Length: 567
Image (cartoon, rainbow, N blue to C red; front, side, top):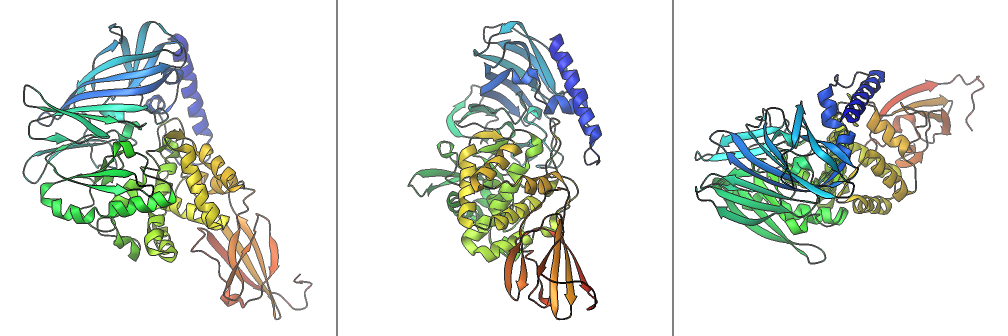
């Protein structure tokens, strides 16, 4: 235990030193609690979770939960101490090893350090049963912050939900609360009061009425699942279902749970689900979780991408609560299209660290544009994408700080969508672009990944190194600026051009009009270059609908007696 403690202290000190060296104060000051939550120390890497068996009783009257989680794991390295996570306001009742030994533990912030009386040996499969209880923290602004939502429906029935992305699943159940480690499968058993039902992830295996009248629902998730996706939804729902048939004729069950008064509206609004599945199957591949089905569950908050059990709270309106940044955005339900995109990008492919959440959000946001392109055409898709520009802040990097459970800029949505559209335009080969998207997805589905994994795969799939591109758009708040000088001498014009960027070797191709009404590529670097311009300077344009950049344009007239010449 002592050597593990020393190692943790050293890692914590190292992380603080790294942040201190950051020249820009993009991020808040981090604490030991952040490090315990976000860093993969030996107390976490010594074991690999294989299965969670979560069983809890949820009491809306007391706003409390009580139960246990059986954590099955493979021993990666010999150890006699491990870290499991549970928020400090929750009570640890006891922790029991699979041989019946009650284990000792200590707590620090949200970390529970469990001690074993002897070393667990490498390659063994073991499990502990972690009993706990308490009142989980309440979400103040769901889904943007984590916690339980204890409310009542229109008829006064209890309505209970939870959101915990970013905040952590350990706010309501004990687990290794790090995105890098997903169980291969999971059993979620929720007991709720009479007259209510629970809807969770996966397939319902069994409903049991207990002697006291409470109902226990056993849901089995047959795929890997990240911790923040595991969910419960307790209420008095109306239910209807449908079937989607994939291109290879496989049947996918669609199950919908809504408030009874909204049943007829939902039957109309949820038709977007089949449209979404068809478009995303075309661009990425089949829905990832066929065995577990697809569910859409009405929620009190806007929505959340809980795997195979997506929370829906868009009030049966088009766009986002009836608003959109472009006209085409009012032709579909944003929450259905965006949150469902996370089944591919975020749920099937999951970032190992919260700092890389752009992998979830940028690709899901770009998927919205592909949905538009599939049904309304490429030009409408460009309008949709460019309508997002006013929402970009360029305030801090999209990639956040690692090992402290902290996201980067919210620009990972709108700017991330614009970035991927720009990359498509740089590649300038749609056959290659769409093959790359499918190749990227098929390479990493059901896995956890880093930004390096994603970028290297894109480089390999396209045969071109785009490190410079991602470094600029993801690691710096500024977008590249295309510096232009139009030089006129008599009847001749020339164009000077270069990139102003944070990356020294930035070399992104860009389309401009070198001749009237015709876009051509130029290949700027960070050094000035000159090219002849066969166009009236007033007609010169840069293709800003396909490339997300800034422009700095100067027009200069040259003394005809100077030595200036145009090659």
